[in-house]
Image 1 (tube, rainbow, N blue to C red):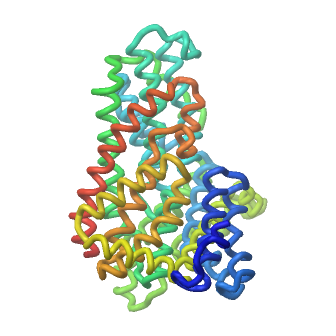
Image 2: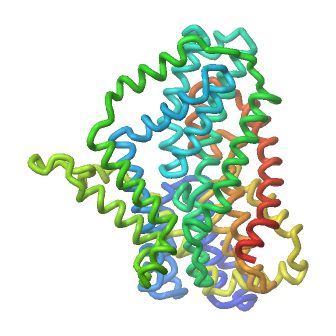
Image 3: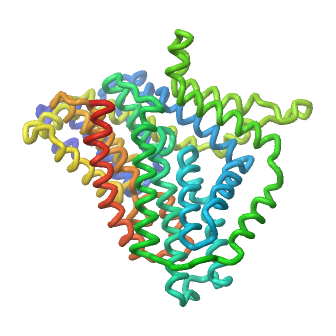
Length: 465
């Protein structure tokens, strides 16, 4: 309908077609009328059919280097999960923070955020939830149903722990490029639109402090202000963690190999620029390092005689292939919006109403925070970031100054159970009421707005301005 009612000559002949397809995709992404990855294939076929671009152009975004960066990251995460190294790391981190109610919540948040930096937010939440529920059962003397909790402190502990697991799963993903899909989509779009590359270390300089600050603020708000529990010591919690570690047994050869490959990969991500300069070549970049790390998991033998390796191709059945297609669809849509002149037109219109100020950045963050509660964070970035790039082009400012705040804000989906999978996962525990999530999430959104805005107009401008 948009196609038939949109004036052809307002921007370009292709504009009505692209807007119609974008509206179609957005509708399906919001309503999930079709699986998200299926919707992502619409522009691949739709744009050539409409004459917006050739099939060779519409398929190229699905093989963008940034997609292979995430694929390599997925393979590393798959090895961590297969051999339960992530669970061992999490339990060891939790064990360090004590057995008081607040200490346990802090330990869970730190462990969850750290794991979420490297593997998917959903997988992190699913791994940490059963461990958290076991601790809650200990606290409640096995009163496993939420309705059986009469003590306010115990109830607040149960609710607070579940919320903090969900929130840390999302917030930890902000720290690294591969931590959550919106980060990868933004970096890929930035490279496609402007040829600007953001390295793993550059993202870490911004993302890590933002993520950790939000995690710490969330911990303080939940345990000190909104849901104080007052539990001094939870009997049996230390024994529970020890038992879970004992059940894992001593560190096996597979785990050691995964740890070695993972450590080397992370080190190369951090020191790639230094190594390239030292040896005067340009082989190492985030994508090549990720793919090499993933390949090493398939080539590293655990028992060569028996043909046993760290990963086998059959393990990739569990790989989130749909997410990779979702990236490709978002990049293809962004390419169509740019090629048809829509991005530039919107940018010119907004630039005509405003000039670049810190208040424009604030407005974009607010819009992103609101939208991410209503639709998937990947959809927010896919649709909203190209518009921000158009605004930046017209205003002649670095596109990172407008696009990065939107991306970080899109990762803060904290008010509604359906806003992001980690929220839905912890909400399913039964220990969280919808009003609890809305109350804590509203305050966290306000704090996130302030923190992301301050970082955007200080650290981001200093690093990229």
